[in-house]
Image (cartoon, rainbow, N blue to C red; front, side, top):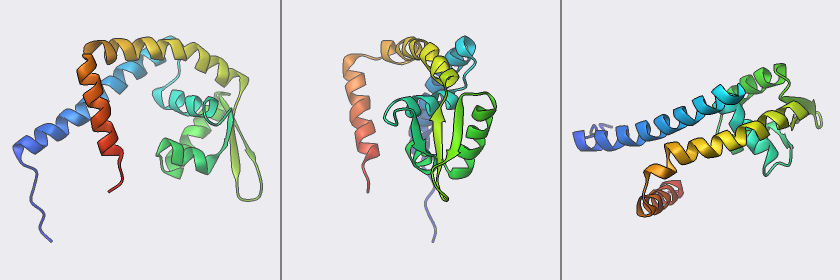
Length: 146
């Protein structure tokens, strides 16, 4: 099967989409790291653990929640465990639970206002209300299953 390559206009759209996300995520991640020492990935894991998971979740469920493969999450969790941010324990023979530690919660609480300020500065303040609404609509469309 031969697939037609992207046109120059299609490539511009794709690159704009990728660069927009990478740029904003990079800026926010750098702000969090500079203020707290947490990486963007660590902040993402801690946020999910503290939020809907109420501090604890099965590792497999966390991988799905993060949209990461099991190997990537496992390596990330190993680094976070070594830093004392999370704990891992067996729920049963086949399941590992990931739990937020006191240090992890402290680091997360210190990072949240940095995150909020950085998101406002690097994303929200740069867009009009109409642009923000358009971005949300586009995100909803792209998030739909085919």
